[in-house]
Image 1: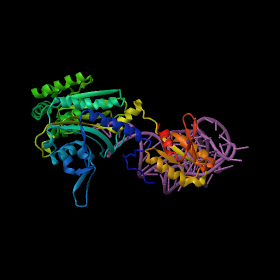
Image 2: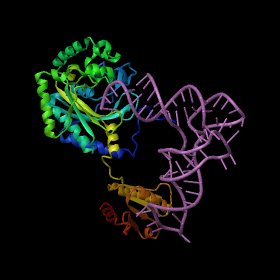
Image 3: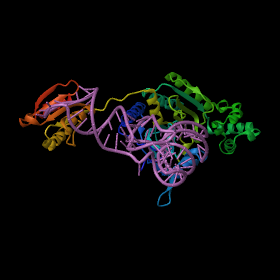
Image 4: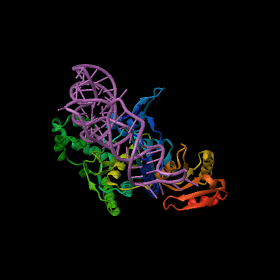
Length: 419
RNA sequence: GUGAGCGUAGCUCAGUUGGUUAGAGCACCAGGUUGUGGCCCUGGGGGUCGUGGGUUCAAUUCCCAUCGCUCACCCCA
């Protein structure tokens, strides 16, 4: 038997209502904040991600689905959306139409990692990007939108962590400070961290190795070495979040795995999923647009993992979706009336009613059971003496009331069912 | 890439100190008087016990390999 590829999942009909509920919630919140949807291809030229996300990141280093097409071009299934959105923004000069472009997306992503609870090789994210303004109000807005979506889905058990990485200049200065601090301790660092010491020293803070943590614990913190502008912006974000009534904690170790972040970074965690607690992460990325060939343009955004959110929602039973129903199930009393039933179903479906009937020549009893299983609001009996006289019997499945209607006055039938 | 656990009907699982036709619940199908549901009752279909090899008179039960799944590490949504 051929099965779905490792780390991929079918979203079955029984799962769909929950997905749609989430998508509607997401769209609604983004709509309230006036973000417009964008859809980009599932694959891009590999160099987009290599440049955009950073060669030293785990995503680019070991997780991308990269392949060559027949013309020997290296392509990659998108592992995240920001680089793709920025590519589109630059390519189509979206900034020429309006100076601030607010975009959202809901899309599959691909990363070749070992699957575990809340982690898949094809997974889905929704997210937003606001390109064209350095305003910290937008940064606060990102946190607010993400939080609002999660709350709208009924989630509790959430923690919001924020941090500031400063401007490129302070970051460079700070890196020197950190480098000085760690220089004589370098030998005690783990192998990975020694490598990061050379390539991307900030990510040493990501290390979960205890010996690294001990060394790094008393290291100078970036947040204490921010320039005035970053410091002021960070204050604005904090104040604004407080005004929104959004609880948060400051986490100086929140560096995040993608190279392009500047100033604000944030993450929202849930205690209701497995070991992968991050539902959502984001921040400002003022350098990315120029890195990808655009004019220097400030931007901020976030991404959230749909599978993880749905997992948290399930574990918290945070929302329920309404039962699926159909308007009417047609029941054929005489087997030779199949085509009559089919024709009538067609007429009713044209009236925008959801209609179904039996295609398996099953008994009336079996048809009734089917109608019940489908949560049909009505069943309509076709056959017997009534049918010979041009009559049909309509039964209300919730109270059992039956009503005789004329086949000629189909409008009466339709209006009764629609009520 | 590393580590641990698990693989028996569509689903959730039981079972065998190795021994006749491998079980339950749910789901599915049929029927419970000949035109009617949800509850209940009766009956039925469906499994080469993940795959391959080994040990044995005999393996689904023991051993090895392999594949898959799950969870965790790394890292991330």
